[in-house]
Length: 207
Figure (cartoon, rainbow, N blue to C red):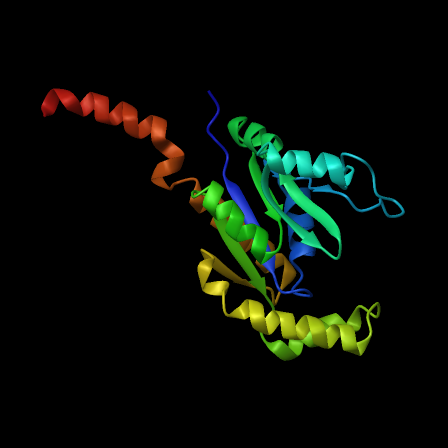
């Protein structure tokens, strides 16, 4: 029987680089699976069904909520986004480490439903660098950037709910550190329940 995988939640301020980190660690490691979200928004150019997202109707999404099919979900700008539970559970049972790249609201929902999940928050080294990265995208107005900075300030009050804080100052270093955190989490007692049970049974003769 394969060792159970670990569920890792990666969140971070908008512009912190969490998407780049997750993409790189998935590319470099065969045992990681990136969870695919379900959404009610329309596909964008280049996005593929079952690869980028599972694109569904609002009615289908609300059925999924009612039936308890989602690990977490949220509504952003009129569209639902959520993580299908079955995909996550199947991957973990097969021994894959599943990475969810989601917002703070969703991360707290995951921790409630999966207490053993490892929560990692990504941040740049300082606020000035965060604003610089947001501005360098060149896709948003200064007004939107300032709104994102305000939201980052609000989010910063809740970062201590995460298990680990990852400073994205050097991409390659950050990816290695995330990999090390995931590897270390495999040694938590809850990940070795079968081994602990076996040792407990063996020790009974000495009790």
